[in-house]
Image (tube, rainbow, N blue to C red; front, side, top):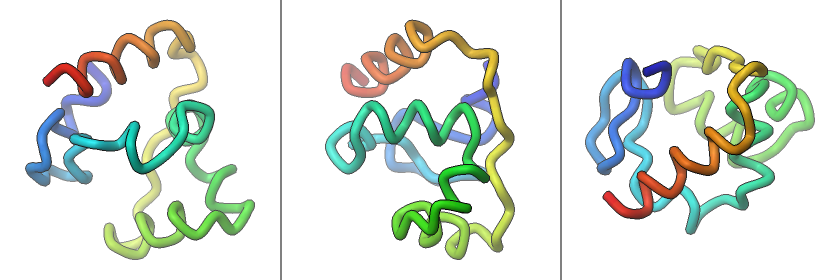
Length: 82
């Protein structure tokens, strides 16, 4: 519900980038960190995170620290399946 307001499981852009292939571009650990607190990843000067921010007018993705890791893994499996 939180994800689909800004993202699609395809490569189509909405408010944020389409998520197709994300698990091939970034590790599960990175994706979980990003979902839980994107600003923290940006603050570490992560190049991929900085590029994402630059591509989307430096608007940060909202933090979702309360989404269980198992739920994030299920979402990623759905994106890979889609």
